[in-house]
Amino acid sequence: MDAVFTVFFEDPFWVGILESEGEGRLVVARHVFGAEPSNAELLHFMIHGYARMRRSETAAGDGPVRGIVRMNAKRAAREAGRTRSRPVSTKAQAALSAARSDLKSERKASSREERRAANERRFELRAERRRRRHAGH
Figure 1 (cartoon, rainbow, N blue to C red):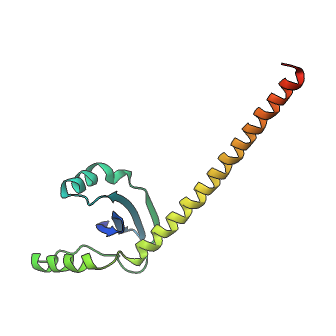
Figure 2 (figure 1 turned 90 degrees about the vertical axis):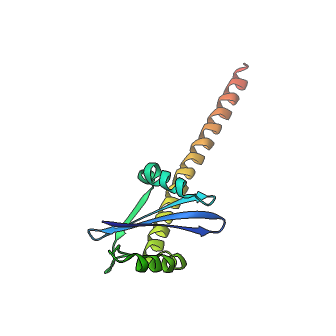
Figure 3 (figure 1 turned 60 degrees about the vertical axis):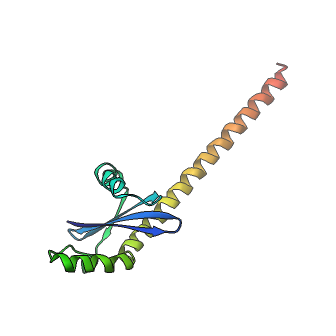
């Protein structure tokens, strides 16, 4: 399974995108760094924070996202320069968008349930106060 971790500036934050493809699955994860991460911070993140990244999986298309191929150093440097100016793959963007919309619908459902429970609790407190007042306490 090959993986590519790309760090780029998405106004106003620095963002890291992990793309890996293997066994017919595309795995995408996104991490927002905030300020521009130094090399030491990136290394620390890859050692400690990499496992905590929330990943979204989709069925992979017909070709690799960006495979890693053994090549000579000068060609690798040229390719790295080209990929810096190239945006993250559209497959990865689509997968992240789908994951974001799933999380949004989950958040909406949970907040709706919390709001309903809070209203119910407030109603019960008002009813209890009303009963006590009516009883003369």
